[in-house]
Image 1 (cartoon, helix red, strand yellow):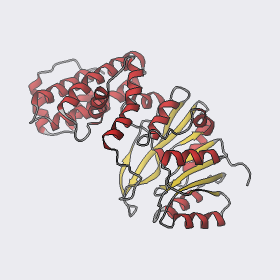
Image 2: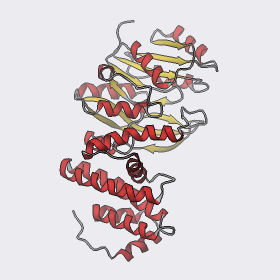
Image 3: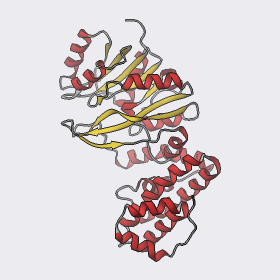
Image 4: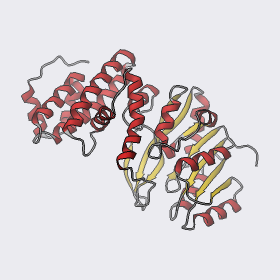
Length: 352
């Protein structure tokens, strides 16, 4: 087989019963100039036999076998070494892919040589394939860069990247076993732009056997360390892990966020907001404000009984960011939150 235009990099660990569906959705792509580099990471469920069958039927399927399980980052690096194409598309063994996924992504990257990392929106599906939610990521580089300070803004199995770019930064770092993707994106961001296509090109399956890793406290700190690094660089000062946790949990309105998290997080988010106003495009500012305000309003609802003063502070902070967007957010929440708003007596000319 001649050198393909795209290498699809798929790690496989006990991929049954969804592996065949994933492979079929890739082999049925409208764009056909590709290879699939499937890394069998010590599967024990029959995945090896399925991969061997597909490889015997289609020369585009290349199987790399790990005699024992070595984990996702190392498996990805091992597969990346085998990828022959200039463009690498990630795929997981339990998801499905829209048949024009590769065509759409190749066309975009060909038209935008400044973009090195591209993903897409995600349609989540249940184990039986039923649709249940659509995940919309920001599409523009500036909005993505700001959001990445707090939360991953790419679907890893929906990513297509330039192979030499990723190889040039050393590939995936096995030390980041809970966030190998976020760490890689953080190392790529100074070098090239990124983007998301505003279309759900991947059907991401949620099921009991999904590739989810138990993080624990050390794993959580490791994941937060990526955001700590990015926030510290953006603000020009070192942030503690507690500041980072507060900012991330508050921006995401995460379940389990504490009062102390919110108090610390609001201070960091205020600093980031100031920097965005000074440095970024208006569209990036509005995107950040919309997400932060929505999270503040959700948290105000959470704390309205247990910590009314904190709830009050969240609402007033939301209105200080952008009154019109804050009013829109209030409309999406409960009457109790509206009553809290009326007590703030927060009066300010609404910006246009």
